[in-house]
Amino acid sequence: MNTSPLFDLTGKIAFVTGASRGLGRTFALALARAGADVAITSRTLASLDGTKREVEALGRRCFATPLDVRVHESIEAAVAAVHAHFGRIDILVNNAGCNIRKPALDVTWEDWNTILDTNLRGPFFVAQAVARHMVGRRYGRIVNIGSVTSVAGYAGLSPYGASRGGIRQLTMSLAADWGPHGITVNCLAPGWFKTSQNAMMYENAEWVSYLSDKIPLRRPGRADDLDGTVVFLSSDASAYITGQLLLVDGGISVNDTRALPAKK
Image (tube, rainbow, N blue to C red; front, side, top):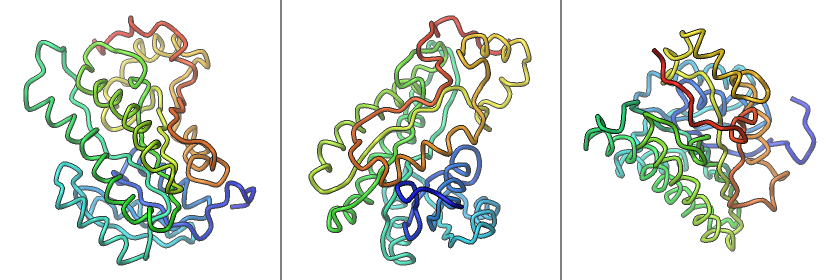
């Protein structure tokens, strides 16, 4: 891939969590196309086979290792395995996440813990484990994955929205903590993209049409709409940007989002 030197990731080592499918797979491939070698994780190692083959088909090295971000020992083991394999981590894309879509009155204690442990506690401790190594090298790019729910509220997404709002605040705090060590920390916040978590909603043509009318660019996001942003935040082009939330949402965050209906 021919890129401007500012966006060229040749020689960099990127670590992408939750990369077996969906946006994580998209991020891993985008970074590989920009020149990075990539470490990828998922809770089950076999589920990473497809992403690993695609990264290697681009001529980049790929290392797959299991990781459950809800388990601290798993985080420490995965980061240690990547360091043992590649020798360093230059870029972290903190992507692993989950959602349980329910009306607020139906959310259980277990639902809340599952979502917050996966989407907020886990990413903090992954970033911490990676940053311990970045600090000594005085270099690092950390990209936390948020959501349009980092800045807007939606019915049926109370714990998810809390976790994504928390990621935005966490990003700012970590940027302040680690900036003196040459590490940037930013938050990439996608809008409405079709993923395995929400695919059933996109089967409702009426809902998709209504959603598209709420988006100034008049369509939900496509996976490749995120490629340029994740490369930008991982590259020297963003060297003086830290603690920021970058929405990639087709403009929906500038409109009234309160009336978005759930799938009938």
